[in-house]
Image (cartoon, helix red, strand yellow):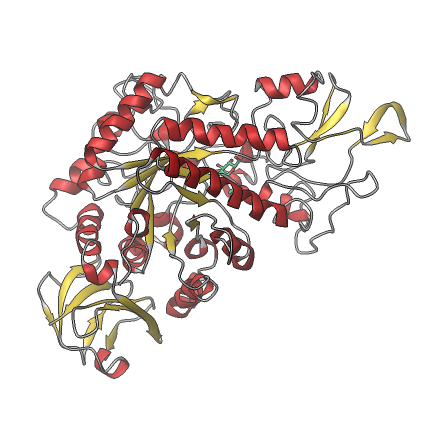
Length: 558
Ligand code: TEU
């Protein structure tokens, strides 16, 4: 048996710093807040945490528009606060991973300001083009191509200073950096080194598939073809994207970053530095981030298939398809990872259905590989509820009152629920930057820890305990289905067996597990979800396991 590296069995937790814990009463979370809650992370078994951006930013995209890659945003604290956080995390054995946003900077970054003025050395740090003369207006020019922004509308913005267009895959305040310029590539590698020197364990790399665009042909950027399934002309999906995402050069850039990390480890010692790559691209593209025969890539290209490729209407079969869509494409010998939520998606409780949160926590913690939990999913937090007037997410604000609810990412970003007091114990101040989500008086750390009833948090804690056992860390796995019932088996040959069984249908069933898998001996409940009345240590007759709709149990072989 090959010994596993620290990240392969890690329990990752994503912190959205604006909404985790506020230490100074301004209603916005901060680094000292995070530091004060590292003990909580330790308690729930987290071994590594990745932080959404904490860098200097005008906050147009709440930190994903960075005006200085190596400075802490004042609302989050100081470099001293950062160092304290790292020190405390080290003491508790928790690794800190930062968000690296390579695709774009803020338009307030000094690089962009200098580029706009064509200062020497800065001219080509961004993607500039003069576009075309407007036949109807001699004083105007037309954009270079039909390319669109993820946040709606044209991806080309006119600069009155430089008298040219620049490309932005996201908001116009997030100009894209030019990866065809070696000087830019080096500057961004230096950012990685800067933070590794300060003790971070690696990087979650933002929106990597957007890194490169197809180079112009004969001086012209090619128009993208229409996507005939979408009729909203402002939507990103109005076009297909052969030219602005998933370019081959991008994969190579991720390998280069890995070399920067490996070199840092070789020269400074310590544990492996890791890359987590954000990619929603088709698995055949995403999987290349792992590396190839000669190059190492990211240890963890995010697997969002439990979010994007799980058709709930297909029940257990849909889940198998979602799991397969990663496991069957993953290159041999690599480590899988499982994600059920993040700061861009509807919350797991809201998306899978309130009765499914424990089950989804079971699935993503008991499948083989790395688990990533988004803050609050351990509590079963629900999406916040915001009016159009309250909405601040740029993706939604570029829409309109009729469609903002589909676009908005504010609901999954509301403040974390620490307790049942005013503002959920998130801040001592009178206001919070986003409203507190519903049911915070039931769904919070204090209540879920001490309640005499079953709670999502208690179930999560049980799962963490189980996850530490060898059978989950190293055991074999098999997942299968028998009509509406989903079964995940983990085992050590002639050793322990753990099985997760869930009814994903709409009717009561009595499941014959023995018939489904004759190797399974008698079972005893270890964990059951909040819908289940089966208590721990209850023994199961494997020929007849009654399961209500949405009921999920984890049992061990006896
Ligand atoms: O998201 C990249 C991305 O793919 C988005 O288009 C995402 O799918 C969409 O917002 C979902 O509704 C990353 C960050 O996670 C996101 O918060 C940033 O806004 C974006 O990059 C730009 O930095």
